[in-house]
Length: 213
Image 1 (cartoon, rainbow, N blue to C red):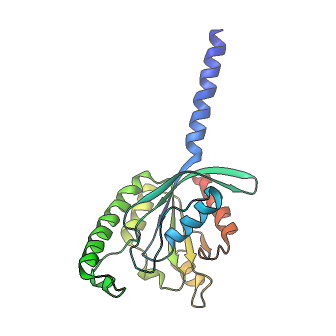
Image 2: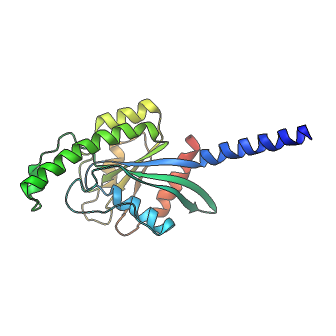
Image 3: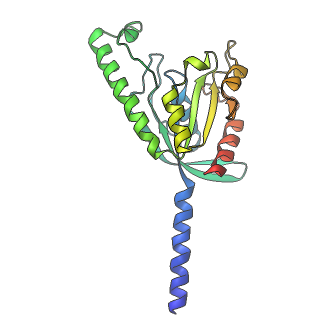
């Protein structure tokens, strides 16, 4: 009887460990307006029916880390559970005058600038909680002007698996090869978060990356 109880305890313990391992914290990082929230929204909408946050043409629309628990993603007969974490856009400098171009009044622009700066600090702190990170870049822009060295350095130091996403491939100026050449050590997947283009390859790469955990 004692042996049977012990066996059941061990089975439950390992089952719990396995479950925790499958609940993967997946963070979305990158510059403002690259499409982080758009991608996170599409994934959450497809698998939960709910979006994670709002999007806008105004930079730094996402100024606080937002997340959605227990997002079960199914791909080719496999299902894995993720905690989706959408982070504010990373920028080396945030000037309130940037918001004035979008008809935001001066008072609100200064407040947005302050919140966006705090959001970047929060994003870096959240790296401690990440199991995997998707860096979302705008495929129409120079990749070297989009990625913060601090973030890359932190990811490398923590040995966090990374997937590079080249978003906006639906646009004529998109240049995936430029992003691939900038990140030769990482897998690069070209997608359109807006139109849901090439998401199958994205999911394939995500599931492949989980093997490194």
